[in-house]
Image (cartoon, rainbow, N blue to C red; front, side, top):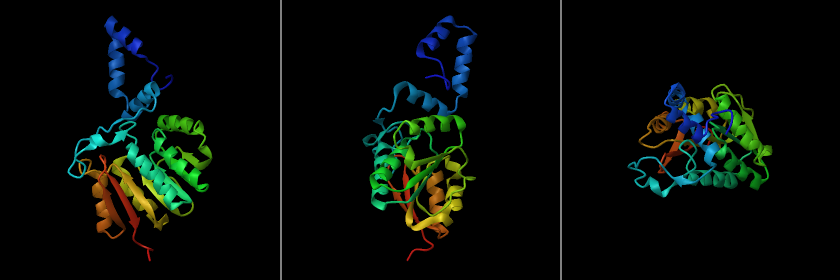
Length: 238
């Protein structure tokens, strides 16, 4: 895999055997490497491989090993299936996803749109390196006609129209801000899905429950390993 991290295992072993400054520099680069970039490098080396879910057991999900994952930043494989089924069930015209990362969840959603024969997903990724990798994957997928990629912050992105399905999967500390920002545009008969809402991770779960206490959304907490909020806007429902 070139560009992002052009060192193979042989390069690394050679540097270690030499025991010089090169080995020290590589170790320092690895420590400084962003988690997202490291995971993308690993994906580039091994491809998309299903593994056992890594998340620790929680009160609501005591057996995470029963779930599968492609990597530690992409939604669990079963959650990906759930998202695709939501799309084929709801028939949304507009889906918005925050946090494209490798583009796997984007493609699962786009598969649902393709089956429906209508709709589009707008997905945004702030990190330009991560965005470039995801965009390449999407362009090579055969599903790009259903997808609009944006290299920008979810808190600055402008979206026109009514959002039928909102999938919040970006940096956890900004999830509450995201929902507040897009809530006026979200269809009251549509759905809000927030990933990483386990009782261990807390941030997203607490944000969703806070929004519920304020009377803005109604929340259901699904007991997946990393946690999943499924919510609906309260205002406008009949």
